[in-house]
Length: 125
Image 1 (cartoon, rainbow, N blue to C red):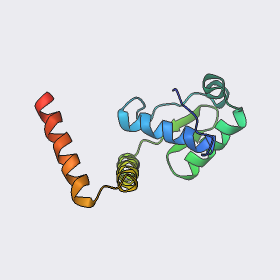
Image 2 (cartoon, one colour):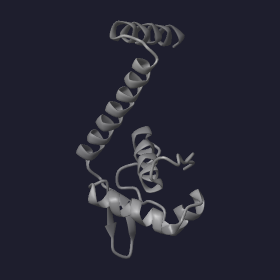
Image 3 (cartoon, rainbow, N blue to C red):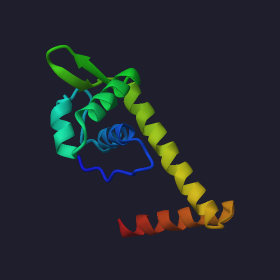
Image 4 (cartoon, one colour):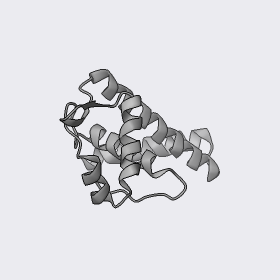
């Protein structure tokens, strides 16, 4: 896990987002054990309390579960994975559209750019 921290965004939230990305990409799997809080804190060079807060928040959000004496595990729940994927896609699309609008593009221009890019990707594959 490598995180380029953004000072404008709480670090514990960035840790959560990175774990969610790893899940969506298949780098982490449902039921998989996460590193200990201290181990992860050392790896990403943050205070262990920050990782503790991230783990606590993920547990409250239903993303992970802590098993006493065994560690913290990604919840083995297909619905959780579906929701994470959906939320991350919505966020990515919203950020893209907001950026395109801030650059002066109109809706038709944005749709055209997306379609052109998708066609090029299909041709490259």
